[in-house]
Image (cartoon, rainbow, N blue to C red; front, side, top):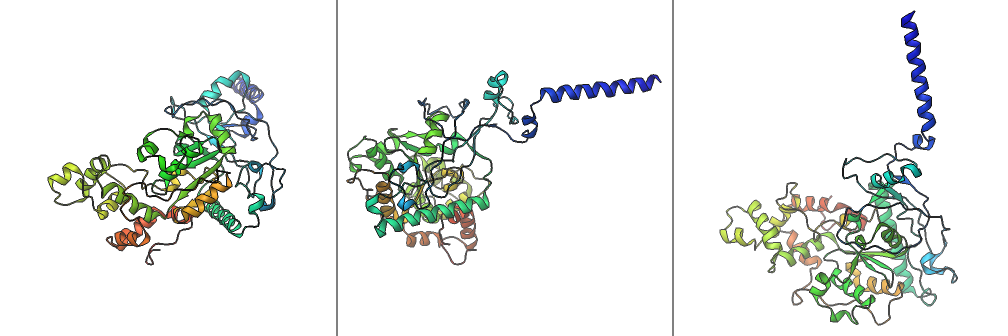
Length: 431
């Protein structure tokens, strides 16, 4: 009898505890416990004053709320209404949620999604990722001006852009998970900001990036001509702002309202261009940092002079380093994947240009954003101007030094870039 009473008491106590727990727990919390982050209204955010901080990559992000705004969609972007601002005209884009990730530095664990209650607001802001509408931009591709809509050249270039973006989206949809996408300051660290013409440019080395920075400086009023800007001023002058230098509201506002663009290049050609620039000319960084490590690891019977200076790296040795899962020295932006540099599956770029059609694509982009008519993309070679540019023929000569296996592995290494930007296989024996 005593045992039965004790058992009944335990059951009643447990039931009462469960009732109290359910009463205190918000039903919405129970439903969404599997989803990290704080779910906000996914509407358009009004811009606020930015708090610039270019060095603090781990800054905490504060609460971000916004009212919804109607999205203007035009069935034919080439003939969009004159009454609708250019920035509000969109083609076939859907809103998607992006999470700005803030990792807990003390525990390293993600906090489960909970409803934002006033009594726990301060705790949640410090601990949780913030889920905001990052790529639900009301901007897609600026529409053609009325005088350009009957110009076959501009219409053709416009259609090419739509096709490139479609291929990029389809590749991302097939190979990447897009339901819950996380953007951190790292993902926007290669993006340069030009506020006057509202442009975001993702820097891809060896794809015209020096001249694009010159163009952005002219657009920003920092120089009157691209010819007046020296190489060191472009890369070391710190005149251009990077997107990760803004607070999360500044980043959010620009990603959703500015024209986002990147220029890419055939991956093997870009790789050979980087090798020629960094290892076939004197360089007081790449030779001692990369060259010495590469020669030490991959060259048999290397001379003391080569080990001391790191000069004279051969292309085959460079490829051995690139394909080695245990590289003696880390990756570099000059031969990293565009997929990693610019995160095109996280950031929905409005314009995708190619180095192979640089002049045409670049000047078309400048026309779309309403740049001054006298500003055109510079044609001059930034470095080693007396040397021939890296072409398809030169690229094939370098890759002819490799074995079929090394060429295949190199192609596999850049496979996503080939696929995403619709480049053909550079050699017939590749699969």
